Length: 218
Image 1: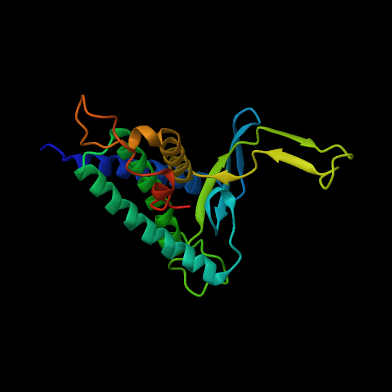
Image 2: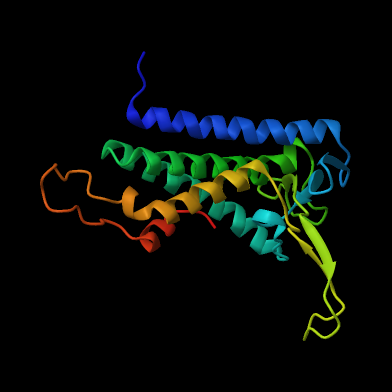
C-alpha cells in the first residue's frame, strides 16, 4: 500500500519519536540519575538529568508555569501536525516538509515526557499537585567543548568560571533545533510559490521566516 505525501512525513515524525524515546529509555534503564559516561573524550558525554522546564536544560520555577508549558507543548504539537498536513496537500517543498516532520517528532517526544512520565516513571517533582502533565523531560546529551576562567580584568565576569557548551539536552531538542535552523537558512527556497510554471516571472516568496516561526514550538 502506497503512502500519501502527508503519511510519508508523518512516518518520519514517528521515527523521530521512536529514536528519541528509545534513547531516553536506554538512559533510564542503564544509568543512575546524574551519572555521566564519556563517549568521545571529555567533550561529548552522556549525562542523565531530569529537566522540569524547557529545552536545553532551561527551567521555569513556577508550578503554574510547568502546567502551562505542558499544555503549550500539546497545543503546539497539534498545530504543527495540522500545518504539516496542509503543507503536504499543497505539495510544499520536500525540504520544508522534512523540517516540519523533524520539529513535529521532537515536539511529540517531549510532550510524552511531560504528560506521562510523571506517572509511568514516577519522575514528577515531589511538590507537584498531580503526576499527570508534570513529568520531567529526560536529558542526556552533554557537549562541554571547552572551559576557562575569565581574566580578572574583564568587567562583570572577571575571575568567573565559563563552560561552553553547558546545557544538557535530548534528541527531541536536537531535531527541533535542526528543523528550525534549516527553515531559517533555506526560507527563500522553501517558500517559493509552488504553482509557478517554468518560463513565468520569478516566483514570489509566499511566507516569511517570521510567519513560519509562529507555527513552531520554542
